Each structure stands twice: as structure tokens, then as C-alpha cells.
Length: 583
Image 1: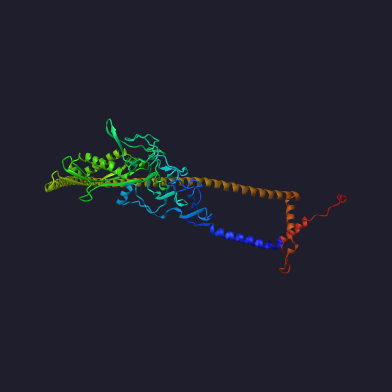
Image 2: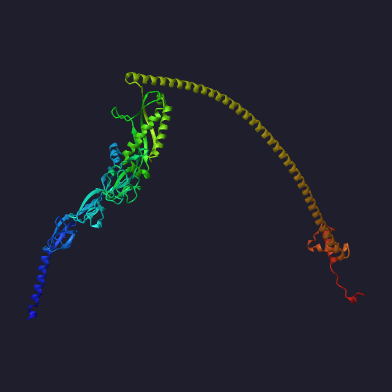
């Protein structure tokens, strides 16, 4: 029975599961797109206190603090509801669109001097977060930490990226990040922190409520002043250390910084030399320095000052003057006019027309301005006098005529002096030319003298050389003759020795032959016997020739016969036996 209904039970269970899954998928499923977040709203629970918009406890009914990021979730529609809100996106910027302007126009310089200059391009931004829900802050407290749960502006900022923030809990405002290009530094001012010192009119001790509040004067950083026993003096707020309120000593180098603009203020300061010009632009815009000369004439001078700020002094500049305009308006401009008037009043009117005196005036102006500005840590490279106008004490046409007469008189005097100087120079030049010609003649004479002496010296050297050569040749011939004589003597000795040797050899040969013959004769017993032996030795019977000369004539070769006969005589006789010797 049970086995028969088992398939139906299994099918019913599978159908139930499928229906439940379909109901859960289409009823409980919540899908949050990738660029959105879901704000949860609880439908059940305890009611919120009066005036509270967001639930701070888990069991409270209403908008919850936590949100769901992009993805798929399953919520009970009876208990929960939700709202889709866009993610908080902090742009990262596009570095390819950044434009660094190194030669700024006058308008751009005016904006830069106030500290509000921004370069062109899509720059990164930061998100300043304000917490709307949480515990109430302490009196005067503006900035709070992220994990404190206190209402107020968070110290931490959102860097470029996408964030899932509950818009009912947090409010985000976008601000440009601090981008410091090359050639600039960033001077940082802490808007909150411990008070450095009790400034005049500020009696709040450090750590009090007012010590953490922003100082209104920090927007311009004006010089603080107060009464002193010796008179009216100025006091400059010292540079702040980390954690203190005020201008920090360390500056930001070129780069990108994500700084909370509610906490710190950054002013861009261009490093290097800049130009400050006080000249006549038009009749209405005349910035020339005016002062009376020593002779009563009115002098108008146009000056261009080349000045700069060292990176190590940028914080001091901003701390004391607030911005670059303060440096120009409070130091360089007033000092330039004061020093120009003080030095210029010691010169006569004609000194500003002549070139030498004007150069002395420019050097004195530059030197004194450098000395004064160096005390304020401002670098002055040069104070260049560009234009000078001389006006007579009396105005109107008469004054103009007096000025022209003065210029004409000075010009004529200058021309006369220059003419006299020219004549003196010409006279000196003629004298020098005459001396030069005389020296040239002396040089020619000296050259000829040197050449003659050189020829004599060359002839002497050649003669001495030939003499030495002849002596060397004679000495060589003498030595050769002596050597040849010695060689002849040696040759004679050689011939004599060789002749004597040959004679001795010949004598020895002859003595040997004679000895041999003597021995032969001794062997034969006598010379006659030796001769017969010789005849017999050389006798050849076959060589005897008979010649018939006629009847009764018989010729023989007598020499041959003699030899044959001698041979016969020399033939050994038959030895006689000892027994026959007696016979």
C-alpha cells in the first residue's frame, strides 16, 4: 500500500519544493545592480524616538544604518523593505587632461596670489563625509573620527573610488584633491588643533573649546599687532608643529595629496624667481617711483625687481603675509619706494641723465633692497632701472622748457666732454702709432742685424766644419797609410815566411830525394852500379830499332843498346853455392 503511494508522495514533495523555490525566488529575492546600493527599511520593531530618522538599535523600526552592496539577496518582504540608491563615486580624474602652465598671465597670477588658483584638467577629488546620525558632539567640536559614532565632519576623507554609503546617515561633498605641479610647493595650514600661544585678545587656554575652533584670521593669516611699552610693534604667529593650529613648517612637494579641506588649507606657492614691475603703463596707471633730486628736479623712475622664494621659506612667507600679494604689498613694494626715494634724493638731476651715475644708482638700490628683504627671507636677484624721467620743479610749459634746457645743456656738455675725450684719445692713438712705427723700424733693424749675424755664424760654422772634415780626412788618410804600411809589412813577412817554408819544403824534398839516391847508391855499392841499374830498369828490348843504311853499314840505337846492356849487367847472377865458392 505504502509502496503504491510512494511515487505520488515524492512527486508532491518535489512539487512543493519547486513551488516554494519559485515563490521565494520571485517574492524574497532582492537584486542590487553594480552601481547601486540598497538602503534597508525594517517594517517591524520598536518605534523610533521623536526626531530620530534612522534606527540606531537592531530592533528599531525604520531606516537602518547598514546598506547592501551590489549583488543578490533574499529578504522577507513582510519584515523588510528597501530603497535603491546610487553608489557614492569619487572621481579619480584624468591625468592626460592636466595642463601645467609655467608662464602665467597677469590674471592667472592674481588668482594664484590669493591661493585659489587651480590648473586646467580633470583632477582627482576627495569626498568630505558628514555624519548625520549618532551621538551629539562636544561643544565646539566640528571634526570627529570615523569610528567614534559622533555626529560631525569626519577627519578621514574618501579617496577616488566607489562607496556604498547610506545617504540617510552620511552626506558626502566632493572637493578637488591637492595637486601640486612641478615648480610649486604647498604650504599647509591646520585649521584645528591646539592653540600655539595666547595672541592679543585671545585668552582661551589650550584644550578649551575655543582652542579647537577655527580661527577666522587664518583665512588671510594677517600679522597680529599689539601695544608694547616701547610703542606699536608687530608680532608674527610662530610656525605650528603637527597637531597644532597654524601654518606648518614642512611644505608639500610636487604630487597629489588627498587632504580634508575642512581640516587643512593648502596654498600653492610658486618657487623660483618672479617679476615685480613698477613702471608707467599709461597716464592713468603710473606706478613709477617719484622723488625730488638733490637739485630740486622731480625724478620718476620705473623699476623691475626680480625676486624669489626659497622652498624652505615658503611657510614663513604664508605665515607672515598670508599670500604672495602680502609679500609684494607689505615688503617689496613699500621698501622699493622708500629705498628708491632715500637713495635717489642724494643724486643730482644730471646724474640720472648720464649713464655712469644711473648705473651707480641701480647698484645701490639693488644692494639695499637685498639687505632689507633678506631679513624677511625674501631673495632679491636684481632691481633693474628701466626708465627715468626728469621734470623741472615748476610745472607747465616753462617747466618743460627748463627740463629740455637742462637736458640740452647736459647733452652739450657731455658731447663737449666726449669730443675732448675723443681728441685726447686720438692724440694718444697718434702717439702710440708713432711709437709703434718706431718700434717697427727697430724691429726691422734688429731683424737685419740678426740675419747678418746669423749668416756670419753660419759661415763660421761651415768653415769650421770643412776644416774639421779636412782634418778628419787627412787623419783618416794617415791612419789608412799607416795601416797599409803595417799590412805591407805583414804581407812581406807572409811572403817571406811562405817563401822560406816553400824553400824549406823544396830543400827537404831534395834532401829526401838525395837521401833516397844516396841510399840506393849505398845499396848498389857504387854509383856506376846504380847507373847500370837505372839503365837496365829503363831498357826495353822491343824498342830497339835496326836501320839498314847500306852495305857494310849497321846502325843501332845506341841509347837503347846502352840501357839494354845496363839491364843485363844488373840482372842477378846465379848464386854460387857455398861449396862452389872455393872454386
